[in-house]
Length: 158
Image (tube, one colour):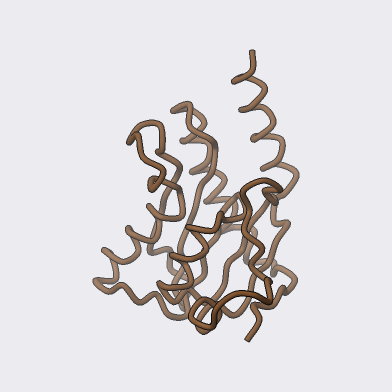
């Protein structure tokens, strides 16, 4: 089954705002400002993360990875069935794969990442990566997120 794009819902804005607030923490730490939140089917936030690749000196410290690990610890289970991942930037291939294998049902992201963003709706994905992740939505708070990313990279170049 192909992962299908759907429009985002009004309630998605508050969760994305929380992810955006986490991205500001990453910005303050001189990390690429990406934040992530995992929400269970009842609407409870169970996982939080923001980029820490520079601090931890490891590419596995992406916001999504940290949020998924946090959610798994809080749920005492690696299966995050029915959960939604909110992330400020389109997930890379690794983060999408981890989300799919963790059985996250829906991914909502703000801004697209033309260089590193993984095309979730790819027809070439093996079934194991589309079995549990059914939907994605994009463009939530896109303007604010793009502005923060542009500001971050402008400061980096100066």
